[in-house]
Length: 176
Image 1: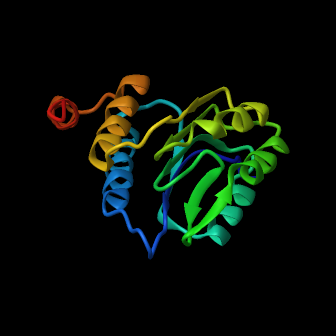
Image 2: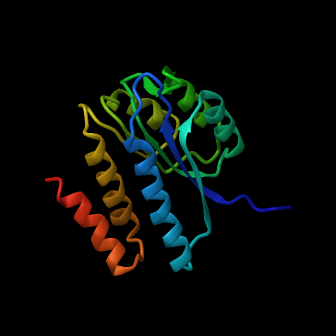
């Protein structure tokens, strides 16, 4: 029997009405950092599941397919206190959290990299997610992407090449 691998799930909101050009760029940069980490590290094996414009159907399928395997769930895009936007419709966080609550191993970290989504935190905590990062206010797209990259580097202390580490941190810090 094949052992299930730990996954990092990177999801971007799909919106025709209010597209965010920064979403695929943010998720692509995170994926590149994680892929470099996998190449340069002998640590835990993991997969990176990447969907820069997820649909509601894809979200449901991914959560079912990756049950008990998601270590980090990262969402980028439009959001609110009640949920995340996909297909220009609200996907209620209570539905996502209820799905995760049925897992025996919930994600350790959920990042809600969008605007005004702090109202979702309690639901994810109740579903067993230990750490949830969310916002109370609107966030600038480029700053959100820079934060995501710098945060990923800091929490994992990724053994990236000195050039890559310096470049990512420089991109983030120059915004302030």
